Image 1 (cartoon, helix red, strand yellow):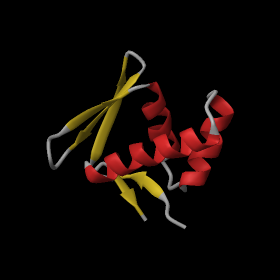
Image 2: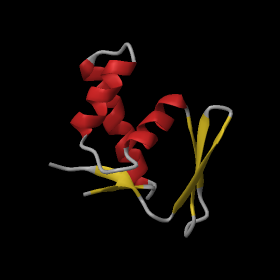
Image 3: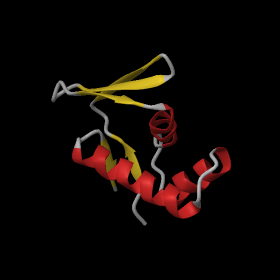
Image 4: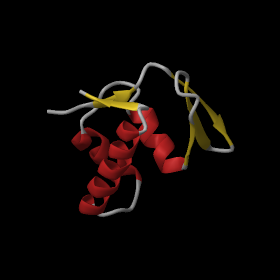
Length: 87
């Protein structure tokens, strides 16, 4: 089963309840809203899509299908931007 985790060459910090991420090698930076920040926190250690969505479903009022779709879209974008690795 695929797991997602943060890439190692990343520095991050919090500004006004938003997460700011910078890829050290690329010099690119990203800002995450509070939900993106929560996913970022969850993948500090490798997690499956199911582990991430099950946690978020306990914390947010969202349907399981919508949660899974939105989390998958977020993770795919993070992999594409080279800030998350899929193992």
